[in-house]
Image 1 (tube, rainbow, N blue to C red):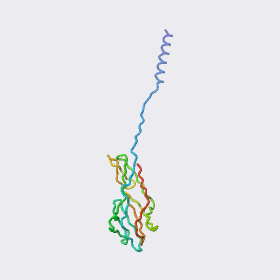
Image 2 (image 1 turned 180 degrees about the vertical axis):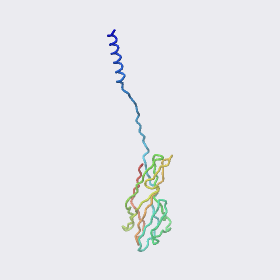
Image 3 (image 1 turned 60 degrees about the vertical axis):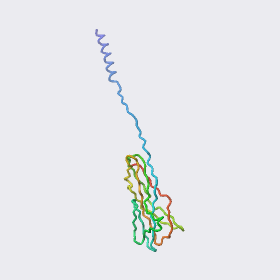
Image 4 (image 1 turned 90 degrees about the vertical axis):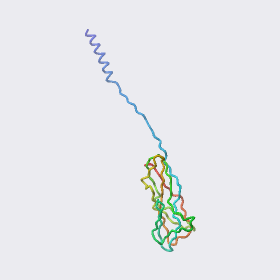
Length: 176
């Protein structure tokens, strides 16, 4: 009987050891969310309008993101004539992407040269935007926002008459 009891004890110990050697498992899933790429499209150009320079005094014209203009000196003036080219406007962009997402804006950091007749030039600089560079927020729903960009233009005394135009300047947007 002792042998049977011993054999039974060995079997119980074997089953108990097996129960303690069990492995535990857990499962998880993998997910990925593809967001709408952020894009920017120019829908209007920056225009400083018609400017009447002073014969000898230099100054500047600033177009704010809201399209309003200011002049650094009364010697530099705006002219409403000829009316076909008189518009003063900020550059306008449409930003599109994931609804509700926030984004940052990178504006030109240096001078943007405007080239005119007979190799004359002027420089635009100090670009500003609305929304400001760190506060873009795409609409929800819709995923769009209008971005307006202004700048300051240096005008020298006796600046040569004519139309001055820059090459394209770059405005960049990125999700935060």
